[in-house]
Length: 132
Image 1 (cartoon, rainbow, N blue to C red):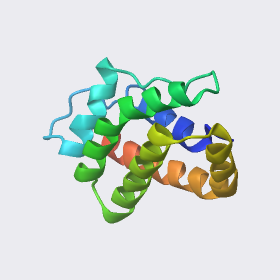
Image 2 (image 1 turned 30 degrees about the horizontal axis):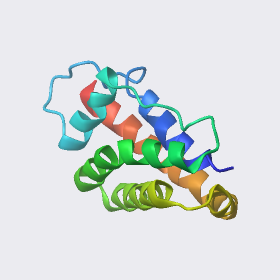
Image 3 (image 1 turned 45 degrees about the horizontal axis):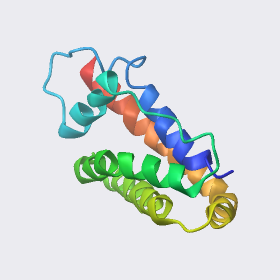
């Protein structure tokens, strides 16, 4: 359960190329879509497979700048809220003292995380549509 939401959020990034975000459209891309396109050349990494706090600290810290930027460029309030939640979770992962604590939080919030990941996927799909 620990990886459910962030794993889903990172998987959303892998939708970027298959959905056509890597293809130039006729219109100018929004800042949000342009930032998503960076995943074409720098694909997201899966959460660490080893359950160590050091591995999660490094992984989460590596994604903080990207998600902070995406949150600041979000196309609407719902997406901004979700991305701000991802930033908060990444900050928690980056400073967590216990994997068990993170695991308990992930288990308690799994349903909400899944809904947020699906809503975020819709933002990615909309972005792809705007570029096509």
